[in-house]
Length: 198
Image 1 (tube, rainbow, N blue to C red):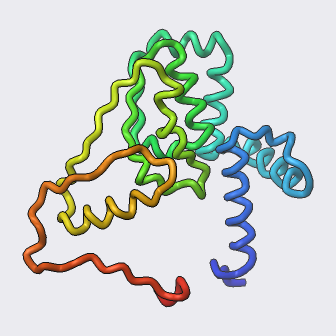
Image 2 (cartoon, one colour; image 1 turned 90 degrees about the vertical axis):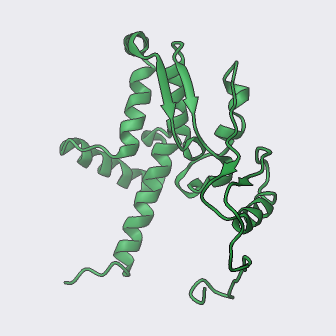
């Protein structure tokens, strides 16, 4: 039988994989997941263990579990002086917990991110991590890079206007570094009734 990614089998696999991501990203104990999904999840995890495979999410979960052991944490903290996290706006709860555990021994933490560019909420990222960063970590030095060297002023003006509609964002405004477009083009927003038409 020929495999077709548009059929129900693939849709079911995709739904299952996303559900596994939720369990891992939210640090949910798989043993507490009820019902048929919990049973299938248990079988899936047993199969991964049998073949000595780990998902990316499991690597994070296992690192968190290991660092919650004081002996392991102390061994890591002895050598860890600095931790840099890029795209911090896209960190999920499991990754944030890993970061907290890594720096709890006194390592310096540097994060780079833009709350206006948070695009992975559907994968479990929590933009609140960057918005509330100052609340969780003391003595924060914040540097805002507001100059946009890539886009023309017309694009930046549209982006700034759109960004003001984002709730609970950090206050900031991009500034253009390039001259206006020679063609005098303006930014046009177009939408259709359906995604297919767009």
